[in-house]
Length: 243
Ligand code: SF4
Image 1 (cartoon, rainbow, N blue to C red):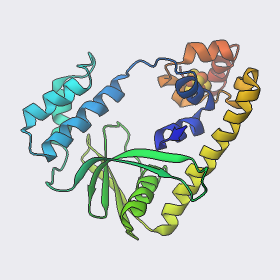
Image 2 (cartoon, rainbow, N blue to C red; image 1 turned 30 degrees about the vertical axis):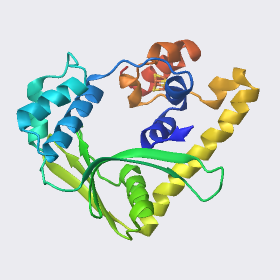
Image 3 (cartoon, protein in one colour; image 1 turned 90 degrees about the vertical axis):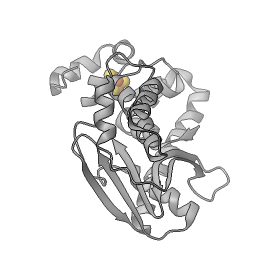
Image 4 (cartoon, rainbow, N blue to C red; image 1 turned 60 degrees about the vertical axis):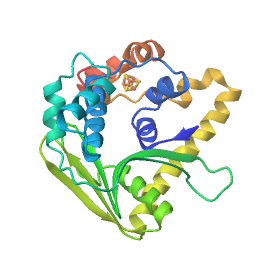
């Protein structure tokens, strides 16, 4: 399997949701937040490349298949909030091995914007958070370090709803911390996949449910309920997770 920050984060949050999505390939309906994010990212990318605002927003909306819960106005407002500076590269794809071992798992990702040693990720979230709250930008900084050799990388999350930025200058220590997190989780998943080949009936033990606030947005809640004989709802009541 090729890993990404979002795959690893999903596994870290709920191994069962990870399995249902990436191993069982269950269909997941395009949620409003996901569709909005897609549309806004496309709109900003096009504006950076000189496309007029209305055309960029329309193309962004099309990118999200004109999702019924996403409006032109919402996309337009968020695209308008992005501080558009010309120059740099957008949607930069990388795929790199997580260590020098020949069998090392690979990590891929798209970096929204790279300008020299600065990387930016646009966020449409309702809740802003610190760039150090998870390893996303640490991993993207690691990728840029591998590709360009920079020793210091400015990683920034830009929360479009609030025009608010959370940034950090990642040094080699920060980068290594993020890489180690990713490698440890990826190796753990790889080991479980080998066991799963031999013991397919152990899938619920290898990739157990982990009820949390994420259950509210999980497309697989019905399957999860059946797999766990309802433990997800019992935990919901206990922890008041409000599915
Ligand atoms: S409903 Fe909750 S516990 Fe079940 S798979 Fe989804 S996130 Fe995991």
